[in-house]
Length: 164
Length: 209
Image (cartoon, rainbow over all chains, first blue to last red; front, side, top):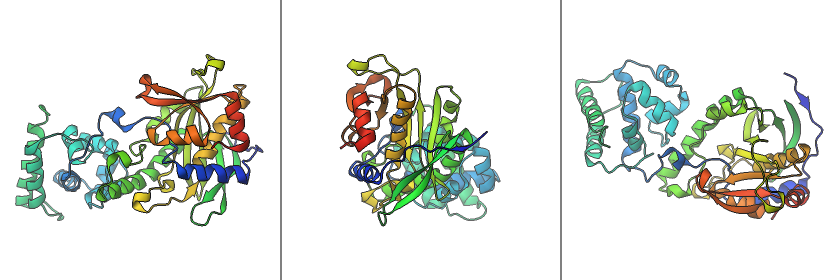
């Protein structure tokens, strides 16, 4: 492939500054599709994001996967995954949630709720999420208690996935 | 692929910064873009959520995945433009020269350049709620200018069409001077905008607004 430098008419400084200032007076310049095209964007679940990172970490460790390996298998950005597990106030993208749900064999819809990307009135899920958050600590290996907490939470995710 | 020099405005001091406009973005470039933009987007959205900023106020393109748009570049009538600076992609635009046609009455049915996607890098987003001013401004304008120029080169007389996200409607209508032709039920009810020949000429010469 050849690359050539074009000698096209460059925007004048006056034009650029005028338009750049106009951009700043507007909220966005984006052209494309809206998030609701995906059917995902509704008011979020308040407890979700914190639990989401913890759940992903536990599910990964329960399968003996390193962060790098999970990122590779799920084809998600490593830095994003690390930030998610560390609860660095990072919001996962719908694609990331979908990819992780597929690899970790978790229910996509429920994970979307936990990630704050979808809102489903589900007191049982919220309760299970809170319980899981309270009983889990991010250590290198899953303790028996953590394992039980994780299994219990996954059970709720799986049990309720059909009717949600 | 061709490259040309363009300028951007650095928000921190208002100075002009030379950048490279790439005509002929490759699918592999979209992968690079997505890898670089994803984590920045995610961190900003996380901060918006932590600050309890209502979701309707979030940048409406936060969920996009440019990597998934790579197959569209394989279409004959599609091409991608991007702006490179600091070794980072500062913004991208995908356009199509077919099969879209003009809807403005005077030119109805005539070919135009359709802007399929346009977005600036998340580090260029200006988000007052977070105190984020963004690195460069003018990225969207320079990209959109290329769409109008391409329309002239293709013999479409500057005709350009696009569906703007709601937060961008003011930019295309007021700042660029396009005509709003109403909500389009075939495209998520987004407002469709179009340049007539005269509007495009005015935009290229003077800018809108």
